[in-house]
Amino acid sequence: MTVVEGILTTTLARTAMDVARSGSFTEALVVLDGALRAGVTIEELAILTDRGRRRRGIALVRQAITSADGRSESAGESLSRALMIRAGIPLPDLQVEYREDDGEVFARVDFEWGGRVVGEFDGLMKYCDAGDVVAEKRREDKLRALGIIVVRWTWDDPRHPDRFIALLRRTFTAAGLLAA
Image 1: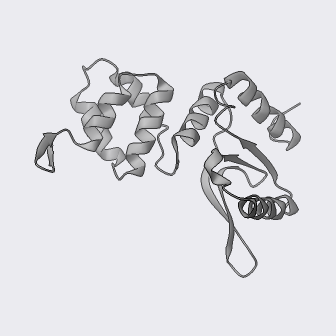
Image 2: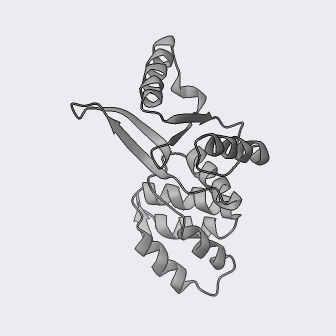
């Protein structure tokens, strides 16, 4: 328990665990990623999971903790990763930076697979004006010039998991990361 603005409440870690144990693996991963991003540690979650070992849904939390990652910057990224995990897609590295020769970062990608494929989850708010679209195109052109395949998806794609996973599998096959 903790006190927030004079009100006794559960800690963020406990709240995340309680919410995670009441849903699906995907929902648990989204919640736990968010908690880690907000400063909860894996150790805090592990202690709470151990203390609550007889609670309903705790096995689900244990499973999700093994995949939880605070580098996932949005619910959409976490949802995408949960679908990848369920489908047996190779796990990506998250928030990988690409640099110019002078060391300046020109791109930070949501997902990266072995320097050969990058994946970007895009919400619609990312492109508020034409300048944003042009800047994103130039960034993507620099990645492609390095021989990297760029694959993008939006909220609509994970809503259709079979289509989303097929997109990733086609991309990995084209990159030589999966056999044809």
